[in-house]
Image (cartoon, rainbow, N blue to C red; front, side, top):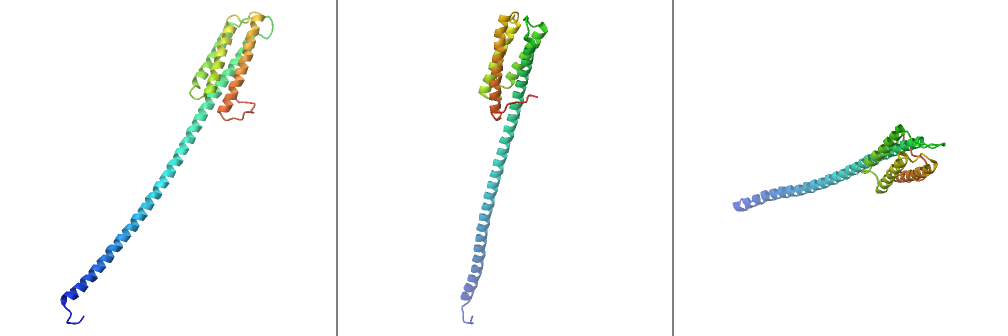
Length: 201
């Protein structure tokens, strides 16, 4: 600038330069802050989505594990019930006379039959929480009919041929109850309907 330029003009130009530099710096800082804020918000949203997916994955895993535990518990209880029913059948077939003359069971056989019946009742009681309503009802019907069969056998129901007939009929009816129960158990466990055997080792 020429020597004739007033000092205030020189100062004003210098001040404008300083203000411009400061303004540029402030604007740059503001823009940079906004970019960082947007980037941080995107990262935070990404983290929320990631945590949400992980939470859903964990929830699904827990549900699968709960279902597997429930299924395993149900399988164990159903298997126990079927084992106890097989044991009951074995004792009944041992107690019922196969040749004439008919005879009432010995006291020992009556005890064995009573123990087998109690074991069926205990297995039926334990599965109530895990069984479907239909299966629970069918198991209860089997147990009630088995009690009636026990009462007939142990209260003089085998001492002649005429009294033996209704007992044999009731035993056959129990076999039908067992077949119905097995069908419902297969359904509850998701087993194919046409499957012929159910292992109760």
